[in-house]
Image (cartoon, rainbow, N blue to C red; front, side, top):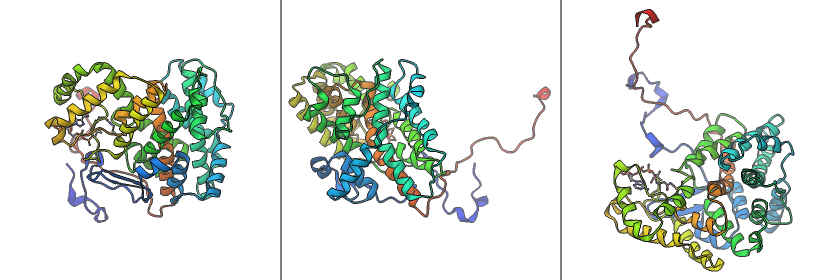
Length: 401
Ligand code: ACO
């Protein structure tokens, strides 16, 4: 047990806050959430307006720079991002070292860490221009790496970025096989993907962003900081939920099985939770979920996809929203409840769902990293603990134990 009286005076209040439910780790001007009112703002702009009127790359600019770009600023930003999409050829060596069936998230984590070895030696973190350039490189290269990881995992040759395509379409082109009707050139698909990227671009101090900041607080370079963020994102309680939702819906299989799934999720002994339900901050409907829900109907309709899992998802949402257990605990669908159905309709394989999230969240991660590096109050993140181990005792020789 900690002896409060022995804490240094400058410690101030010593709090025990597992999961950091009530602790602000930093000041940030990037994203605002009002969890009770279901409000999400990027740099002051409502997510609904950005979803309707903006593009992912414009949102990335906004998150990084604080203001929407003029057309000249946007053209310069797009040009810069486009011209940093290529990877050093030596990256293939890293890629080809992975098991042939490795999960793309495992590869993405490793590949991003290895980026540091290409840009580390001459990286001067004191120079704001070098910091900005690192952020651009990450936004530009993450889709290239993500697509390469996927194609390697299914035994296809890597496809180079085609720089006459815009950001989201370029990624689709790099990732996908060439279908008979090229999906990557289908405007419905590109628009839907871009919209999901906007919704996933930032979400203040979530687990992965806090991880990026914690690593960044030590002075480590941005590439490994973001690689750590990717690792944190992978967990099913965070970004891995979109993959888990689709697997859960497939397991439920039919609308008639929804009641049993809800009952199982209420039974603590079962260890089963409704994936895509609940959020640490939103205790009202997640505003992103409302947008994705509508979009799922639009996209499936426009693409002529009739997915029986959509019916399962709708029945599940309906049943949970009427159930006392979920109502009392304020458990509503989150952004990832419906996003998997859209990705599936776009022909994105399930193991790529969290990778898609990572591509979008890179814009948020680098913006937080930049903000932190510019913050004069930035200090190494170093939580304390409540010690529950043994009291002071004497060492006992091995022959006397
Ligand atoms: N299904 C069933 N019960 C749930 C669920 C769920 N999805 N989520 C929370 N609960 C219950 C808990 O068992 C707990 O019940 P209790 O009060 O009787 O003990 C109560 O609701 C509160 O849950 P906590 O785990 O304490 O809430 P926390 O804020 O720590 O967790 C989280 C939030 C991780 C999102 C949680 O709701 C969850 O595991 N959801 C499923 C995974 C998921 O969808 N994650 C994606 C989050 S969004 C994102 O990262 C983009």
